[in-house]
Length: 245
Image (cartoon, rainbow, N blue to C red; front, side, top):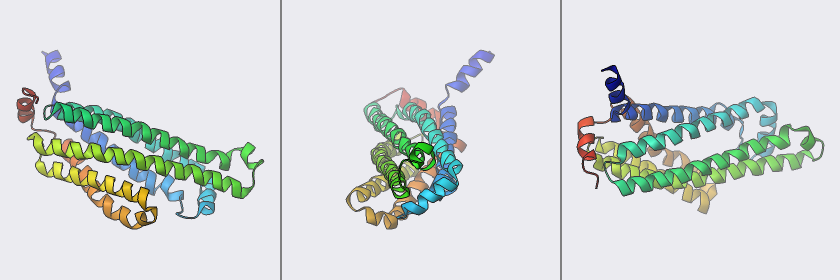
């Protein structure tokens, strides 16, 4: 009897949804802390010298920021599986396509993160400090940080298309509120728009980024909280699961 109860709990879509909501909040919190309290706090836009000096003065903050982003990646991999499971009853092929988009985005983000580790080398390792001028060290670190931004932007662009599909699937699901699907559609549009602006006219991103990220934040926080607190309508999920188009 106890065994059947455990299996029922472990395979419940509501349980998976709540785990997904928790992981989503971890991703949001870790990303926010990395950007505003640790790694991002050390970056001075348009001033590679000040950025390099900040990193050399507090390399621990830089490393913590990197570690938090790795936590985000690990949580995202698990979340991708949960999304695939929860949304599979809505439309098998579209759900698979969204999973492919996310699984392309994740390695791009992981590879981009390596450049932040590379940025530390010219500023902290003795062999670099003794072999290059200060200006050369600053340039090397700055190029690594720029490469991370470029790679991360590419990962967000791919993720934006994943969000468009997920938003549509949530809207059509019946076991999640349509409003959440609309918010995720707006979030995906925000990611895609920001990334294309970053590619076509980078100077505009300092103005457009806060505007574009508003729907992203609204969508992701709303979805994560709903999954954590409410989960999914299990009966409607099961009805959908009995017929997968």
